[in-house]
Amino acid sequence: MDPNNWTNEAGVPSGDAALNLMSTPVSALINRAPITLPPHTSIRAAAQLMSEQRVSSVLIAEQGLLFGLITDRDLRNRVIAAGLDTQRPIMDIATLAPFFVNLHDPAFNALLLMARHNIHHVPVLDGQRIAGMITATDLTEQHSTSAVYLAGDIYKQTAVEGLQRASTRIRALQQSLAAADATAYNTGHIITVITDAITTRLLQLGEAQLGPAPVDYVWVAAGSQARSEQTAKSDQDNCLVLDDAFDESVHGAYFRELTRFVCTGLDACGYVFCPGEMMAMTDTWRQPRARWAEYFRRWTSQPEPKALMLTCVFFDLRAIHGQASLLDGLRRDVLQNTRGNTLFLAHMVGNALTHQPPLGLFKGLSPARSGEHKGTIDLKHTGVVPIVDLARVYALAGGHAEVNTHDRLLTAGEGGDISAQSARDLRDALEFLASLRIRHQAQQIAQGLAPDNFLDPAEISNFERTQLRDAFQVVQTLQSVLSNRYKF
Image (cartoon, rainbow, N blue to C red; front, side):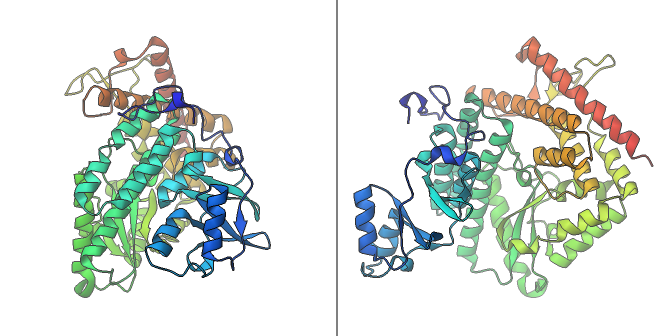
């Protein structure tokens, strides 16, 4: 690693970022041929080879196909600490069917995989052929790989207090990413991975206290966490989908305690309680799968204002922990009910138009004229949210399953729901507004202030103010197009 790219104690890079993980393919990170062993190899022989080759992991392969892998951590924890006979085959201690990335994937995919699943070694495949192995240290962009180590530290915590301490490093991570000019798309994914890790660890700690769940469940993120668009300032939106075997009289108390433990823990870690109580600890949002299906059917067939608001929140869902199959089909059923449903879509567009870009009569910037944030522009609710709303309508209209806003716009442009040029304009507007918001928050964090979404236009250059106005005009134009397309 170039020493000029190490970060200082605050987590902010002291030099230029050396690597763009979105544009760099995984293939560029492979620095040696794969080291493989057949499944029947003894643990001792594998350890000797790892020592000779100075590697921390080897792949297990048979006839060129990947079966598993072992790491130096496996040797410590599963062999030495357990007193296991080293003449046993490596398959006895291996991680079978491991997560992997493809040779031509962006390196960023490997970063997210490591951080999301608390792993530091990932096999690389070219089709079914084993192409190599990459580790966290191969991801030489220090400001990004710190997310892997932060997620690993989170999974080591044994109490909420430890998670609180770990969560304080999220702000420094956002500073680091902003200083290195990471894209808003990348930053959102990286920050969200940390939220996922904290949520998952809280659920693990809750189950350790309360015992195993009596029926299957899946913890589901909603809102910005579901879309992988979080920043260092986020509240929590979540819900619980339970197996239909759930019986309130028998199982209700367990899940009330579990969800309260997790939501309270998230609040302690800086993810404040949702003002609208759209959280799993609220009885309404902790229901069997069949009840959730009823919710979605009712919201799409009777699009009154509250139903539209709930559709906006709960259409953006992503499984975080538990039995992910419980979520499968719910969103697919919603898309079947909304695709071509012009009445519902017209109501959704009307709801989306409640968030208008802050432009004046002659298309100039129009900051707030009164109130606590007078003279500022709300980059979230009048900047990013209108684009999120537009992308959600495109997804509902086109029956697209993507959750991330950038991905929704990309799919909408490819599918003809919006012109390719308009989709590019909206993606560029989203990237600019979200990046401006991230940098604004990073500056506040550096000044010891609590991050917010309110930007004084005087803080940015004339050039950036022109870009800001142009981004808002793109949003306003496409809001008008949708309004004309879906009329009551």
